[in-house]
Image 1: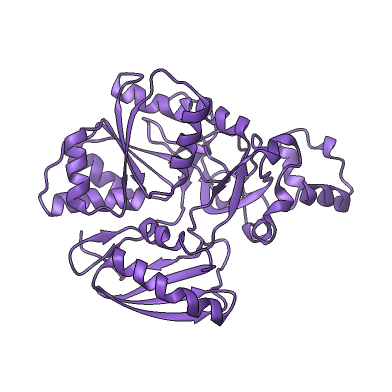
Image 2: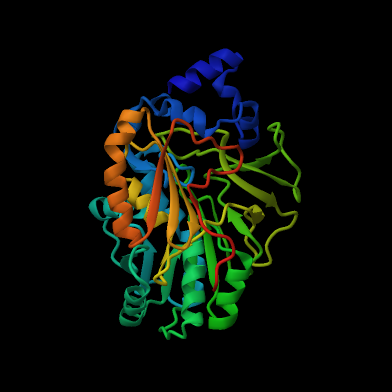
Length: 395
């Protein structure tokens, strides 16, 4: 890996001196902007690195970041997943044969990873999985849940919160699942309490990213995220990069110790968290992230009564790699400003028509005013917000 080869030489540090997770703090903190500038410098030059599979960050920062995962680490991910799957199976009272309905977008990472698993493995007892898109209208999602009657529903935090609030507000009946799991972005504490109170469904969460697939998970005791620190050591730092003590808020920094594709050590994810001072009442002794303050992705409410999740909008821009960054601002229910960042005005002029057409197909009869920009800046450690909805929305 050119980056680390140069880094150890510059620091006059022998890599053999890095023996424990604590030793990783000797390395400077790595930001996404550094990786994005030249992702190839972080890819292992071994055979595992050369044969690695390309995944891609979901674009919550407004810009894509290619991340390679070697096949061995992806296969190990199946075994690592047994930790959080145990929470689900203990709630269901069965270890397999249950139905899972996942609401995501069509090109999300999970589709790619599961496709690889189907090619490379044979697991005789799998959950019966079905997938639906965040772009589907509410009646279609309701129909799928009532038809499939899944024991587990999985999706993005803000999407599931909005879904269950809409079901209640519109007095729509569904066959309730036994478990709700959210990931990829946060769900508000009020939304979580609402689902558990109004529907009697336990709500669990999984914390991960394309850079580190299984960072942590919540359990039945609901005390926070159990951290897989043997896979992805995590620490919290202040603005100067100094580790903060337990109980204090800090920026999440992780090291991926299992991936030999894109190797990321001491990598700042962009989330804010608080390490708990105690162990969980469930008896698990993994370190506990008592709070995770990742950004809750807001949902757009449209004049025709539909709601659109930001990941559906991301699905539009994933088809337009010439758009380096975008920001869609909702001014009124049916009126938007759209800022597009491209390398030049010429690229913008050639791309804007197709972008507007695709957004129109998704959002319907709304007015979108596009603008060209050479820079959409972001302030670390907060993630850039590519979709900005109106203020408080009806539930």
